[in-house]
Image 1 (cartoon, rainbow, N blue to C red):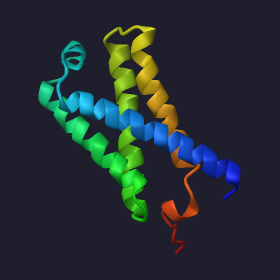
Image 2 (cartoon, rainbow, N blue to C red):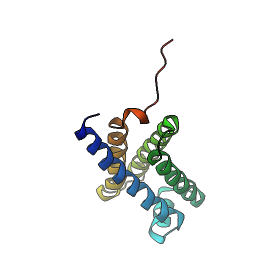
Image 3 (cartoon, rainbow, N blue to C red):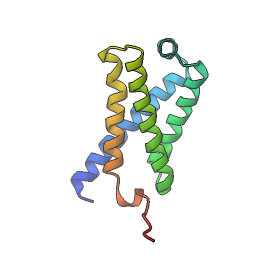
Image 4 (cartoon, rainbow, N blue to C red):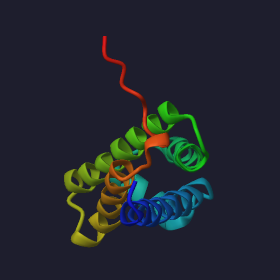
Length: 127
């Protein structure tokens, strides 16, 4: 892995982790604005708690060494959660400001996944 790719990976991964943990904490604490947003999108409030816990666990999985298969699942979860957020905002008629956070986290997820080091990737077995 080149030095440039390692820098790109760690910058994207740290920003992704910060974004997921901070939004997870906001959702876990059920802050007024987040409750209003989830209600506007039509989701039950227990869904907010579930997503928050998954985000925090996903960050732990991405940051700890080893466990490449677990990392793949965490990246997939981040991708599905953030693409789902984008589509939820689209379906509810959200404005441009509503898309910025989910789209940014979606891009950071893809960049972090793409530039991850070899020891954080699953090994393909050819039969």
